Image (tube, rainbow, N blue to C red; front, side, top):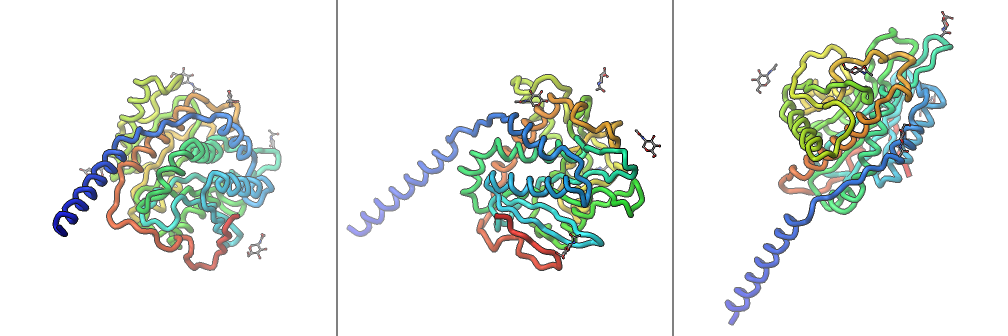
Length: 336
Ligand SMILES: *[C@@H]1O[C@H](CO)[C@@H](O)[C@H](O)[C@H]1NC(C)=O
Ligand SMILES: *[C@@H]1O[C@H](CO)[C@@H](O)[C@H](O)[C@H]1NC(C)=O
Ligand SMILES: *[C@@H]1O[C@H](CO)[C@@H](O)[C@H](O)[C@H]1NC(C)=O
Ligand SMILES: *[C@@H]1O[C@H](CO)[C@@H](O)[C@H](O)[C@H]1NC(C)=O
Ligand SMILES: *[C@@H]1O[C@H](CO)[C@@H](O)[C@H](O)[C@H]1NC(C)=O
């Protein structure tokens, strides 16, 4: 009698498991809708002179924190001092998980050395940061209904400060103060970052994206294939092919991906192969942006991120203490 009950219980248990697995695997993939009105509104909030210490800089920092909070992220403003105060804005989805995919951009602009110059940095920070926010917004249903249930992997969106030189620095010095600080203090333990994706200088016509790091060439090629599929299914329109199966190592200008790469974190640097002519000029403005490139980039990145998250599965998932509780002299302001 007992054996029979045990057998029945086991059979039911196995059956339920099979059904659960089948249900999970048959769940239709998420379909994402674009929200260009959101992108435009977001870009309008970021696309202003926002050099270190300016009013625009503080406004953009506040906007990023508010918007990320609204999208459902846990937001921390990491304020630290290196001569002057800097603030990285860090947003978590699934804080405390062991494996993190990090997406980043920088939000500061060039400080004008002549009073009559205005730097907007449309491609140089504004569009990349607006793309990150828009990808997060348009993936919202997936993040809330699917990624939230996972205990093994999460996202970190990081908006670096201190990318550009201050007036006291040599004019063309690459500072990367925000990203270097983030790496130095292990703000997110580097071994937990399974992939760091850094965006910069996106949004002009005729841009080509190459692989700049040999250890992630396979992922770059995957994006290229995925872009091809999106072209074939007519989901992309009006622009050139962005991702090419070409490699360019020893790119001379280090970017915010560099401090992570130096420490062995796998990084994808999503930035055109040749710096645009308008780079570091007052012509890096909204009027020179190429909208098909921006629209296509959003679709490609969203699909890549979705596929990548779904392809990652880790053993013994658990959520530990939130990762931002590290100690340094800086101040971490949890944003409510
Ligand atoms: C977003 O802005 C671009 C450039 O100004 C414009 O062409 C496009 O129609 C706008 N999209 C929406 C949905 O308002
Ligand atoms: C820099 O941060 C410190 C510590 O939070 C603060 O006391 C100081 O007023 C800040 N300086 C500026 C210029 O904001
Ligand atoms: C800006 O000021 C500098 C020096 O005062 C001058 O040489 C330059 O022509 C000015 N540029 C513009 C666009 O007014
Ligand atoms: C893009 O490239 C095409 C072909 O080389 C050229 O005709 C066009 O002027 C370029 N557009 C820009 C904005 O550079
Ligand atoms: C890239 O990696 C491959 C295999 O991992 C290796 O054979 C090749 O030499 C590397 N290329 C460069 C330029 O480092």
